[in-house]
Amino acid sequence: MTVTVKPISEAGRLPTTPEEYRLAWEQSTDIPYGFCWCGCGERTEVWAWSRSDKGRVKGEPKRYLPYHRNHIMHRFAAPIRERFMEKVAAESDGCWTWVAETNDEGYGKFYWDAEEPKTLAHRASWRLFRGPIPQGLHVLHHCDNPPCVRPDHLFLGTPKDNSVDCVNKDRLITPRRLARTAKGERHGMAKLTAPEVEEIRRRYAAGGVGQKRLAAEFGVSQRLIGKIVNGELWRHQGVQGLIDEGGRR
Image (cartoon, rainbow, N blue to C red; front, top):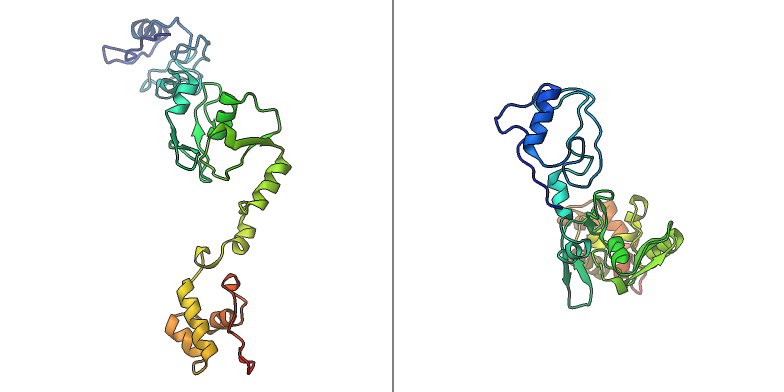
């Protein structure tokens, strides 16, 4: 449907009375009075109060339904599948990577239509290429790649399946688990790099230098050095050589 929309008042004066409001409506669009300007064919609600600086008159119909303003509705002009594929890039590893907006977890965000303006891109992919998503089910990734929207890389699962899948792939990251899952330099509070930790352990195991001196050289506390050489921290790098034949730790 082609919709004609002009400024609410070509004369530059916003309407302040019901008569002016109706006249401005008729001059600005071919949409029937009281219907949404996006062309969806739905009636709008009325203004609860007047605002002369916005051209709103109490008791008169609003120009748009929620989420139907032109700056949003222009996204729905093309067919959904066509709009969806414009935001997809095929990668060498076989994934279809979402190249548009994503959330903090890396999952794509897609504007489906006026009634459902925001949905996750991989869920939209399932609906477009595989069919409806039964209520209560999640769309999961075989490839463990959040921005991937390739249909055959997706599968349906219950919330329990989703949790188990996250744990198995070490992706269920919560503040409580962060300290246990983030290791070494990836940990947000790491003060040393992996090569520095290796040097500290090597020099301490060789003897001739104590924890206090190492702490001063590397700008950390003696307590931290102690935890490193005793294998309490940075365990994923191993603690071989920390205990020599004489039992020095």
